Image (cartoon, rainbow, N blue to C red; front, side):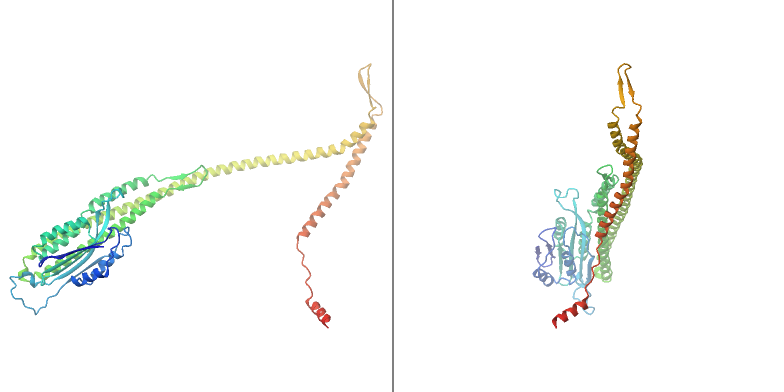
Length: 458
């Protein structure tokens, strides 16, 4: 951490700039630096709340924080008398302390790292103590930007001629707050451009599918980016509301100082200048209210766009589901038709199998008789060379009697033997079934064993 201590001569303000080693890192303040702050400058004890807010920043991505503000107006001793009030006009007034933390948008200057977003959220702590009796004014700035630091140095050059000018001190607070709000308008234009791109991109969200019947994949990157953008807008809205509250509290302090000092006749000349600062604070509050309204509108638009993208993805998902269901119905219908065709083929195959089985049985039964009859009936046919015709013997009936008799005997034996084969197959099956069932073994008689053991022992 780097700390600059400006110790000017008498009647000049003391200004201190507390900055971390890295602008995107945490502000680490040692005990020595804290003691110098609270002892040398008589810093108000509530200033520790501002330093704690910087310590809570764990990483540069955390932009939201609590509202931090405090002020105190010193009350003069009513029994105290002054020597020459005309020579020291401001000596009759009571001093005050004020401290606050505000966030603002600034250019980060790292265009090569993040060219798509040239802005960054900065936070700066301000502490001011004014002591009119000691003619001393102390300013402490925690982690201020380079542009704000240059602006403050230019202001303190002007401020050194009138170090205890109360109206000028209030103007410095006004310039600090307005300097922090000067980049909100270009940042809002940048956010609106980002929203237009996300909205145009989200309107073309796709549902991907690897093949015709494969499960589809939903591209939700657009929806995820939209919700991240909405979350960022909510954070920015909270920051603008916090800055609005800080500016409102500073304006209230100015009015309290005006109401206190306007009762003293030597301080009437401060009234117009303080009134002018209050009017400018009103204009600043009006501009912050406009930025807050734009953020509200942009948040609602982004929310509606996210709902539209989500509904569109759901619609496309439903369309894809319906398309897949239609294709599946067609596949199921074709499968049913194929099943019916296969059933018809199976029935026909069963009939053909039965026919073939019948033919095989008939052939197996009739072939032996035909073979034997053919052996015995080789002389039943003769060829007449004169007429050139085949002559059949008169005893041809023997051929048919032998063939029919042998066939009948074989068929009779098959009818008698077939039930025996079936019964043998059934017996074998039942035996295998009963063998697979575990049987309960007889449990040994423990009493008998015990008695036998006793008898043996005796």
